[in-house]
Image: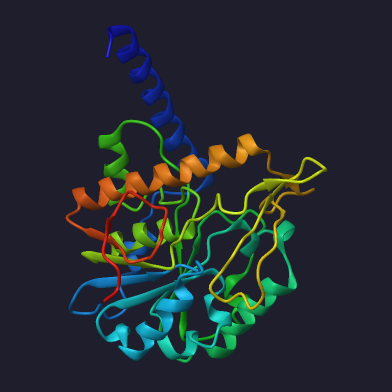
Length: 298
């Protein structure tokens, strides 16, 4: 790298670092809520299994249930997993919702209400629900889950850090910054590392976001989105930026840029995990993530 490039990089990183701390001071704070709350009776193996909602999970779930995998690793579920019948069988210790649709008025829907109703009615075991600290609409999570005494709600920070790498990992170790690069699974990895888990296993993290991508005759970017709980074949539909009013459609440029950031985030999580002595194992068959070691479920 030439001297001029080094100077430009140093200036840019300095600006990004200063901006991050200013944003944290104004928008959030500097408390490590995840570490303060601690783990839920951690499995002696210090392993956590994160269940994404990708289509491959439909094949893995029966095997996880048959083997009682929750006895080998603590389970973390995300987004709409609670609406399936497997939720009450697996009884995950941890749950994360981080997409803006779960706490912004602009993203409110009957499906969101049904998710919180499922958490309210089904959770009869100790479970920690992790939610973003940033909550501009003052969404009441406690009321949303019906004041269920079995659900402990813990905040995590979601402001992304961009700047010097050594400062980035210093922030991560203190619960600042986030794994919020575009998918809730990365937040799960970030939280698992903060809690002290030493092995993180990924299931249902297909990340086949480019599959079924098309532009229709109205120049709308469309995608066929598939999840493990789908009963009917998915059809391509226009995709919009979450929780914006009015809804903002993606362009091919903005969508691909967001996908690039998402996959970059997995590389950041891989490097941070390695620095902390943590293994991240991708057990998802056919996953498009190339950042982690791969080892299918036996």
